[in-house]
Image (cartoon, rainbow, N blue to C red; front, side, top):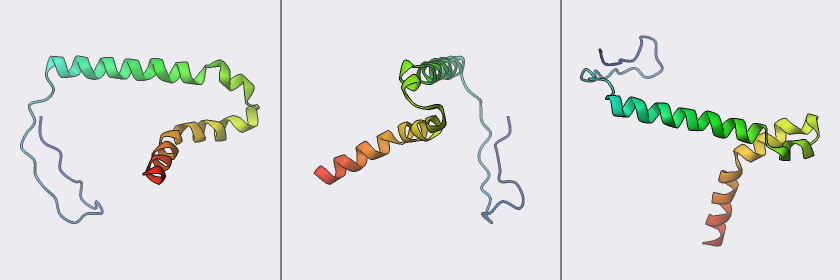
Length: 82
């Protein structure tokens, strides 16, 4: 498989050629497939959790956005306490 190069017109003017890739091994492909399946399972579990029934439908997108950034808030609080 040929290595990726920046397409013409890309914001960065320079382009770096990378050596050709040998591709992923079977073990790597399997590991990625397992992680993707776990991500799908966890995503479905979060979206269908009973907690969302407690949030008014119009407020759910904002609540999901807050949940998505909860780790950022936790990190900020950790830095303040240091």
